[in-house]
Length: 223
Image 1 (cartoon, one colour):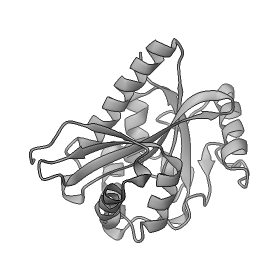
Image 2 (spheres, helix red, strand yellow):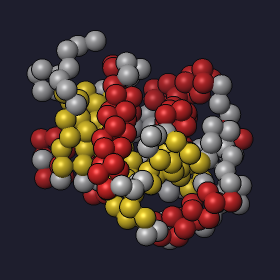
Image 3 (tube, one colour):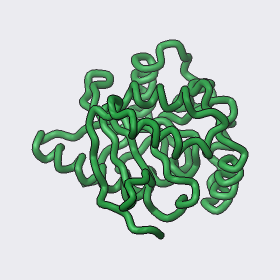
């Protein structure tokens, strides 16, 4: 593991052409084509947590955006990625935990909780957030309650108005991530990780990353 610098938070980063170029380069190995994905995520997210090494090479990042959703103050948790040769070394986890810590600090100052919401096509992210974030829906087994169902239906209506609520599982967004398909090597890595985690949620509800399907999830920073 190479020497790394402390986590940095950059705000309004879309104007930083050098950083955007490094984001494109870092994610290139994980997707068949990544240009549209990066454009979409940069447009949505205002802030980014990054990890560089001492040569200023980008090693990992995590985009977030503070925004209202269904009338609630929330953080949208956007794209995260790690350099291909460093995956599995905990860099992504350190970014997530750093964000959760800072989120709690903001909540204490505001004296209120913020909703966290995100979409994912990867069992690794699904598992991690169920483990470290509070009151996550759907849970590790894909379960949700009536409150969760109403919440997610409202979020979909506001943020994804062109989509119908899925009949198989209300938290699944079908064909929502256009021009975003993982590379063969990334698909194989995720298949292996899914087996290691012993999860079958994606298979049971027929969520297919290659069809641009995503789980929409929400939760709260743990106290």
